[in-house]
Image 1 (cartoon, one colour):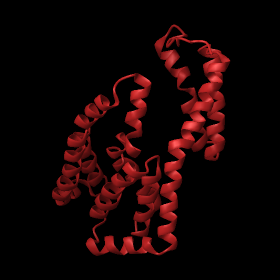
Image 2 (image 1 turned 120 degrees about the vertical axis):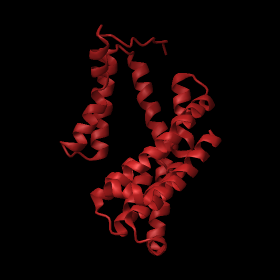
Image 3 (image 1 turned 135 degrees about the vertical axis):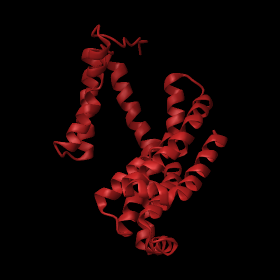
Image 4 (image 1 turned 90 degrees about the vertical axis):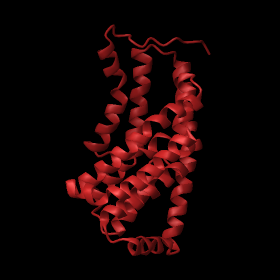
Length: 242
């Protein structure tokens, strides 16, 4: 396989080159949101478009482009798909055995306040699932839990997506950091340190933002001690571990 040096600005205009490079991901969102295609169908078309952009616009050799597709496919199977399958498997078992209902009743016994339920389930439990499973599973599982607690489905999903902003940086077992190190050539531990110095502030901001979305300024005033404890403990752990 020949060594190929990528030209990051083949159009001679960095903005135009960036726009063309973003066509696959833009199409993916368009296919899901507007065309209502199934995930695997939208993803297949996205791969085809990305391959076309690489071959026709960036002049990537065919062998290199196909090798990248194959590598991405197997990297998606392991470890990403494997982690998701394991997480969904555990979730299904908990539902079938009735353990899911026990979790639900346990949370209700702690507090009937939906704002605090959001902190416990959406943030605390979601952060744990993000580290253990990642790749969308935390949002799906915590949103389902919140729906069982009385949240509206779309409302629960939106809140879980927002609150997952802080934990998602390290992802499942640090895979985003490891991949960033592989792509950039920078030591993954150095990237983790930089991320760990930024996320503590983001964590607190996101939690206060969630409370504001749920109940405005009153929500912030009434729940700030819980936000500080939950967000602060998570932020400190992030900083020290990174």
